Image (cartoon, rainbow, N blue to C red; front, side):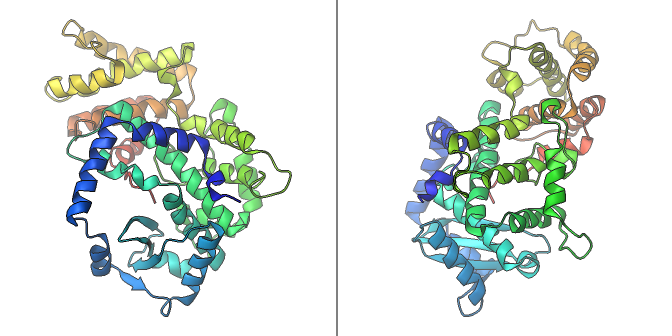
Length: 399
């Protein structure tokens, strides 16, 4: 089978869209210039900060890597590294000099079974297989010139779908849903199984009980983690469950279009569809976002020209004028919060908080006063204030 068929269609569509964005192109051109000058030195940094695991030192790990490469029809040479860390983590580093680098934390290699490592290995190889490094999301989100909020939301949305694609590559290598789910459980909880008798059947039954129609959070991950780019959530396992029921894994399974449609339904809870929606709920959410964005921006000694620029990038040109009654809009925030609370579930309110955080940090920083205002609005919407901190500080690299 052509492994490109594993790729989620929405990942591919957003990827192609982002490649044409002028800010993405600008950053890629800067990276290309540094590469031409030999300034990146990725391998040198890895050799100085991690331990390279040769085939002699880690024969079983290399055997797993070779099996995954064969399964995914990849021929690029691999170098495997381990770095000291108590956390379970792995990463695929963009190739340099024709070699692809895969990094593992020491804790992960010590605690994961061979089958679980096969999933993790396949996931990391999937990022290279699908060209995900061509969208340098970390450089863009943390660079000197921050992306406008619309681009930032597109990048984080694409990143989630890129993880879905990479998960499929890992699951295709593992060919064992229970090992895949157990690996994700370990990544999420940090537990090895000594203190929790994990049951994939019970966990998937729990996921199936999610009331997606009512947008109720599942029970498998903290609520404040739901809308971040990488943390584990029930949605990710649910997406892999239907992948294992598709024609990509079993004969006569659901076709790829049906699979991707199912994933779209699962992932819809994480998408800011209210920004374009025409329903009364979407309108109420937009009205709150507008007034709350003004309140957050005004929290630190008035609204700056830079903040106005960010505001208009999000809501449209000329939506901010000096004729706006700032104090009136701020006074309406509680009433708009009350209306949104009456019409929506917590995950939908979390979308608003996430987008407010995205706007707040789009100019490169969020002040203490802005964070306090964000936390007050989150508390009023019954969203955990911790979600504000996690969103403002979220890492953006693919892993």
